[in-house]
Image (cartoon, rainbow over all chains, first blue to last red; front, side, top):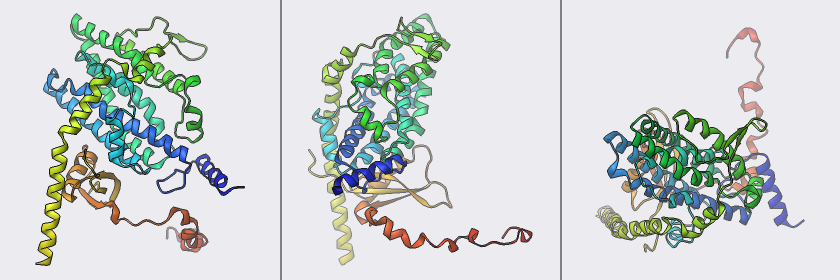
Length: 317
Length: 95
């Protein structure tokens, strides 16, 4: 037996025994690569995810809503950082990871390539988009790579507030005027399908799922999580009088879950490939933020250097 | 583009007076002051801390995980270091 095979077997045995993998432990190259791709995509999604909501910060309808939205956007920045730190433990530099986003090489969740047209979108995003994200993230708290799992525990603790404040926005609108109700339903109509697509391609089309489940990076398949999300969300919509924009949606007593209509995968792949309504705008916003902040980073480095020199001079004296 | 990352810092937080500082994660910062201020914004947004330590990651020395088995083996067969190794009559009560 070659030593390489032996190492891989030992690695899989650890995974099977639910022993977490830590940064300096031996791991197969493909495991490392999969994690770098997945965690960095996840981090980029948090960072780009600030943009659609940032659009409404200055136009929130009350001071309370504004404070809430600011706190939520700040949380997304924090989540991005936890995840960037986790990905860095796999041996890729922070600069490289960020460069991969800015050059368009790395992907982020397609949901953030849709525009936020009305205030109700802040409700729909919190409730549906963060709701779908939570469905994905809760099992990731038990993912096999230690730093990723620890980052996810932190993220999940903070995420629940995001979903609740979103649902509360929708609820408030649904208790309001005819125009407000219409606005909420319009947001529902636009966000429902993209939210359902957040779970990724259907299992038979998902090339990475099988290996990721074996390595316990993923604990559930895309379709399992999508079904769970739909089953949890339909009653929440009904409770506040929102209609789910899917004429094929109906309760299936035999399977104890909802049946739902066909997903438009052409739209999904089109947005993934960069042709969504806001792909270009989002990337440009990130590039501008990075470039326009260059002088701040340079000034901070220069200041740190000056202070370090000064303290050396003081010691010598 | 920036040519180099700022140094990496490991962040430790005391959640309450009387408890240990505990490792919570890492971040990049130009200097210690910036590391502590950023750590406040990243790791204590919900009153998770009353004190922060920032240690530049390069100063942390770690045991080698590949040698963990042999390295920690000496403690494995010393059950007599635990209180439950000793049988005390029940009549004595808690000891």
